[in-house]
Length: 141
Image (tube, rainbow, N blue to C red; front, top):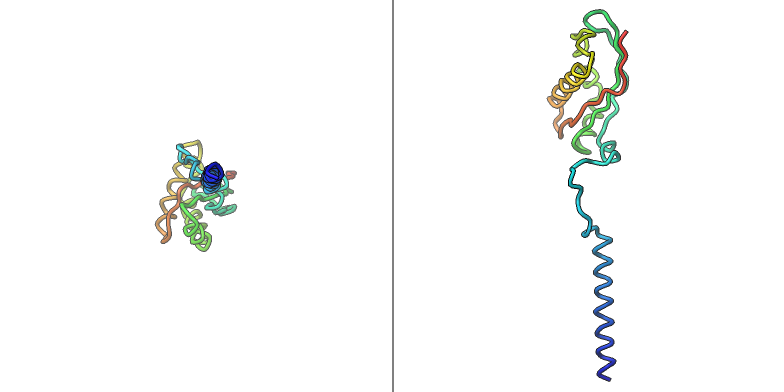
């Protein structure tokens, strides 16, 4: 009789332990966070807005056709940016109208323009902020 009680007690302990391990694994308690801090591309796309293609004249009477994707810091800022898309397009056209083709050439030119847009767009956002502006296509003629 005493042997049965010990066997039942050990079985219960093993079942509780197995249930605990299963819960630990299923609830992701055992998974380490990524140490690099980088988001997956799926996470980036969830907070990114496609501004689309903009075609306009530059200050030196050249013509630019350019497209952008803008990454925000969260869902709320993405939603606001989508509503303010027309204002963002206005900012882009206004900035481009004061530039010459050489201002956009090279890596520094494009990165400088992206940073300018990021700063100007952040000025109009009430919810969150722009993390990065990406030029996705670019043609000057």
